[in-house]
Every structure is written in C-alpha cells, then in structure tokens.
Length: 101
Image 1 (spheres, rainbow, N blue to C red):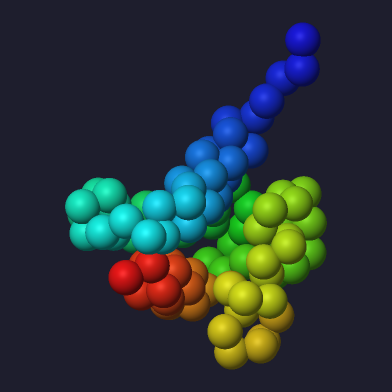
Image 2: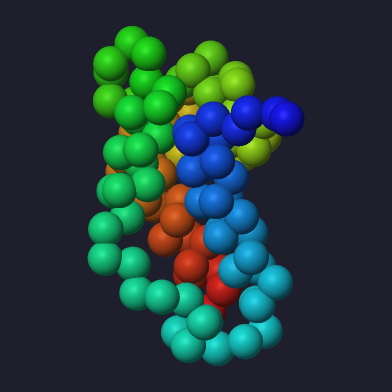
C-alpha cells in the first residue's frame, strides 16, 4: 500500500478545495464558500512543510516535490522575485475568490 505523507495530503486538500470552487462558478459564491477566518493557516502549513531555508517564503526549488503548486508557481509569485511570501499567497487566494463572484 502506498504511503501518502501528511503534507502531500494537506496540499492536495487545499488545492482541491480551491479547484472545486471553479466548479461552482455559476452559483452564488457567498452561499457556497465558507467564511475564511484565517487564510494564513494554509500558508503557515506550506511554510512548515516546504520552507527548507527557513526564509518564511517558498521558492520554486522548495516546491519542486509538489506538482500542483509547481504548476501555478508563476501565478502565485506576483512580484516575479521567484519567491512566494504570505502576502502573495493571500492575494492569489483573494483574486480567486473575486473571480468567482
């Protein structure tokens, strides 16, 4: 039986929840999306799982083991400095929510 690491499972759940929002794009998003109290909790978990240099940001190299985040890295890296920080991550999530309304 294949072992699934907790961090891969966590990332998969986060990405799946974001992607599932696209499925409901024609629905009233305010009714389908739960109120997000702490966006930073997702980013904090990513930092815990992937930030090997302890810079509180994520590089493309650090995310190489996560196919889903690697594919959208350039979309997350809003300032183009090849690092994703908490502000960029939260801005990306906010833009996803805005695009759904």
